Amino acid sequence: MKLKLAIDPDIVALMAAEVAAGERAVTAAMREAGTGLKSAWRTQITGAGLGTRLANSIRSANFPKSGESLNAAALVWSNAPVIIGAHDTGPLIRSKNGFWLAIPTPTAGKSTRGGRITPGEWERRSGLRLRFIYRRRGPSLLVAEGRLNTKGRAVASRSKTGRGVVTAPIFLLVPQVKLPKRLNLARDAERAAEGLPGMIVANWVDQRFEG
Image (cartoon, rainbow, N blue to C red; front, side, top):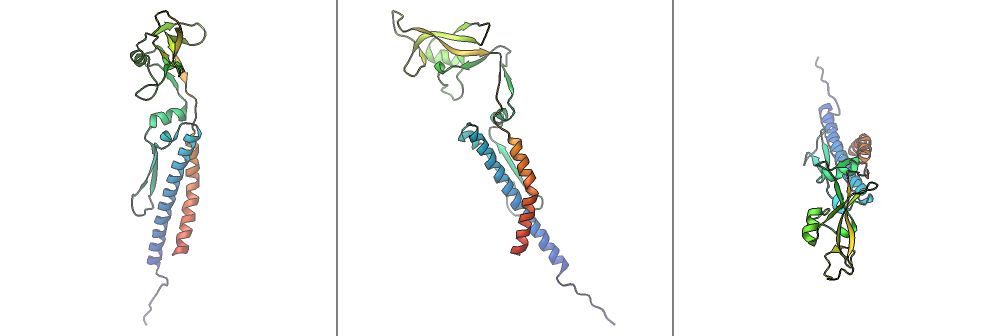
């Protein structure tokens, strides 16, 4: 007597299909989570008034770059990590040489190289000399004698009589500055991580119905 055992459906084929569905589900969920986190960080940055340029420094990538895997991953990062990190942590900033931090006033204008203008650049550009004024209360000052143009910027005076010449504060001098915390990137990252299992399950169920 011969016995023949037949299993229908094919267990091996069924397991292979389940693994494939899992790979597609995990990969799709990771891509969705990575894209969602990138969008959330960009929205948070622009909402904090830090501009679209800094927001666009947030990038994402998916691994593997092609195909599906149960070990799929998503990476979200910034191309400006120092700036983003400063706004995310709100650090205490001190001068590197232990003296003063020079904070430009509106009369100083902007740097031609981008960012804040320095006292040295301001003197070279304006042709004026800065003078230090110590104040016991409040920040000390770097001031210059000149006139204010139509934009409110301090410039050299051409008057031979001294008419219109003012002593304008160009920089405020402080020993340290506490940068306000304007971002909370960990909050969005935690939300993305918490929602990931649900997305994997939802995608896995969809794969079953599609199959």
